Amino acid sequence: DVFRGGIVAYNPEVKRELLDVPDGPVVTEEAALAMARGVCARLGADVGLATTGVAGPDGLEGHSPGTVCLAAVWPQGEASVTLKLPGARQQIREFACISVLDLLRRRLMVDDA
Image (cartoon, rainbow, N blue to C red; front, side):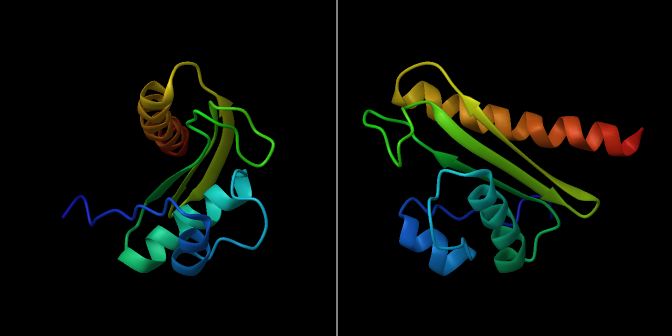
């Protein structure tokens, strides 16, 4: 009842084909929002979260490791942010997960106020 599922779309082509990410760079807030919307559409979920970025060790699309774009969509709105996270690959991935959950938490708190 609470968690419908998740989609791991690591490859840019999968992001485009499965989650309706527009052509162009995938390390953008626009791509993250498209991914979060796509998750809601594909899974029939009320809330969608997405992360896209560079965990390393190499850069991507001119971005250095640690650059991540996060997005959350829910019935009352949408939010996205780009962060520069510290650490090695695993830490960046963990911080991205924590950060996207926090993004949703903070926005839902504002909506409830």
